[in-house]
Length: 468
Image 1 (cartoon, helix red, strand yellow):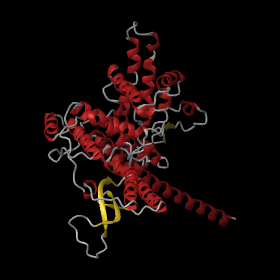
Image 2 (cartoon, rainbow, N blue to C red):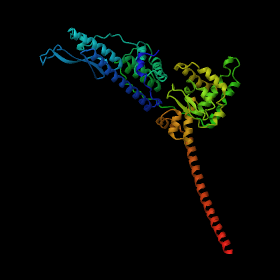
Image 3 (cartoon, rainbow, N blue to C red):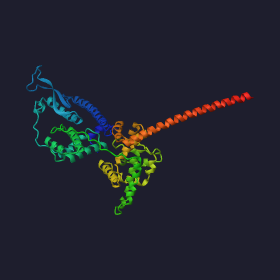
Image 4 (spheres, one colour):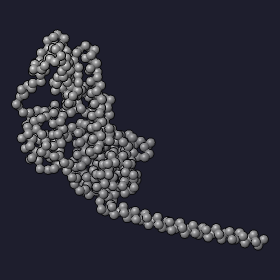
């Protein structure tokens, strides 16, 4: 059942261009923020209208990211009655956040204050004077706030498979790297972050703590001493087309030596992973894009003459149709074979949660290692991007096919363009130029020959005329 917090996102479709890059993430965040701002402005107008219709003599104003009450009140203790009326316009801050949840609280407080004024019972209590109540000294642990973190996180984000995936990563990093028993105090957080040695772990922990801190408005610790810089990517050995074709046989070779004691219903599982390998190589897909609601009926449909694979909308960058760079690989890797597709269907039917899909994705990587393939599933995606560049495919077309922005295609994928590939492209360009020069010379020779024959024919025709 959908929560009330998610009603605000019912008419909102997040942009599908988020690809993990800074620009893509910022675009997604900006669209979400603008949607919430529009909803808040409409909610504020509706709340003011309800208060006015109920003749509540309390207004609402927004200042410093809070909703404040505004009313004509008895002179505050210590204030001067300059007009001699005994009343003055005041703005009362109750630290109500300027959010949709805050609007509900503000309306309740406005009604309560309005009743006190109507009954002439208003008094300047600590609440309205803004005096800070005593706060419990008991510190909270990460485990204490994790449930509240999830609830508030999805009050400002549409609940989609993608947003659930993102939150699950934050929660997992906090559990593993910080620990549920860790107190949310400066000394405890500093200690945990200092103990982390790997750049990747520290980056993930700081990033997740920043989201936790901003979502829950935590003030018990800061992260100013820890700068979260994304670790540099490790060098990759991107496979050539020849390597990809050669290693395709690894799955079948593995099956020949596989233990016969394995369960019968698992004996042919290698066939599905062989198919997955072929699809990743041919289409440059993310592994997850094969496992989230795969449209097998469309894949096998005779009308699918271009052999496009439909990526489901619930994936990282949304719906798209992908095309192969080497159409012949569809047949070379037997990608229309019904047997592995039945195995895929059995693996993915009714499995749509992040955990379910992640389990299959992890199995994909483990199968590559099991059959001794010397590269990862994602390396096949990088190889597709490089192949597209070497074939002269326009960057926009290649980026769209891979489901990411031109920026990430240029800035990230092209860095795996090895020296050997650069040599190959330059050789191709030089050979192409040499071929062009040869064609130009051949064309000039043929033009001269045609001109010679034309003149010879003209002379022959003149000779025949004169002889008659």
